Image 1: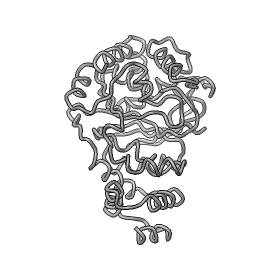
Image 2: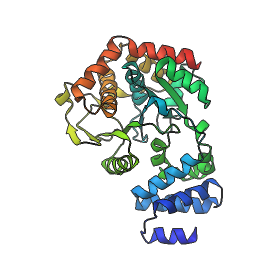
Image 3: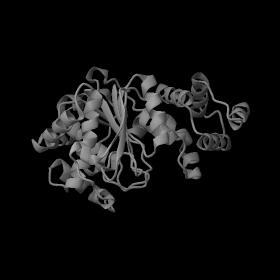
Image 4: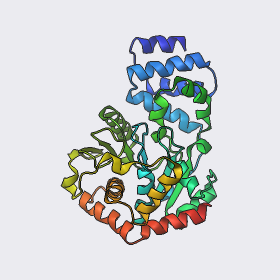
Length: 331
């Protein structure tokens, strides 16, 4: 570790293999907490490189509880979190619209760290019981095209750094790794990031991994498309900055997207969206995220066609029916 830290302090870059070995050693408790804290701090100050992040990802995935959903070619819809905006569960809500449109979704998530309600919170509000059992996950996918994977059940190695991360109280490389360690290794991903630096990093990583993707960022700092300002989208094929009006959407206010003060309130907003009873701002921001997720799967479709598919899934009741089947299957 002393040699690794010295190299990092000198701004040297680790190879993918070196990073993978380093992370495996961390998960095997070969370093003390002071060494791990120093390592996380130097990466936070220097910034992590593409090969290093891929190496860390490979190490964590090698220790995961495996689940094989490859036959379904699913998509994950996830934000990096930590944008401080306390929005309702936009990404999770978009998952049910995408599944309602006929696509397979393998959502990976956790409890909220910087918001009132993370994906796991809203799932628990609906009585969902978490599982890492292959047959139960397959049953859910067959029943409604949607599975939810509660991260702690699949990534036991993350426990080894939990106390250090809590003590540091700042974002670390593990926050960057969260969206990349979905245990099912989905074929497609819609990934929301809070800043343009992360956008470029994740785009390069996902291109290297061969995933069909769209990385999105609202230019006022949301880690999803919030429609509160211009937003940027980067895919395997293009990068574009959109004005919401370009796609027929109106500008939303930041207060329009707040998730409330309690998990119960956030769950009510979530339900209102899928029942097509939410405000226009709440509904539109879920629809636009679902639309770019659909385009990540179907890159030959125009975004206008994808918006139409997402809207039909919501307005026809298919998204709500997907939620009901999902709850029935996973309660």
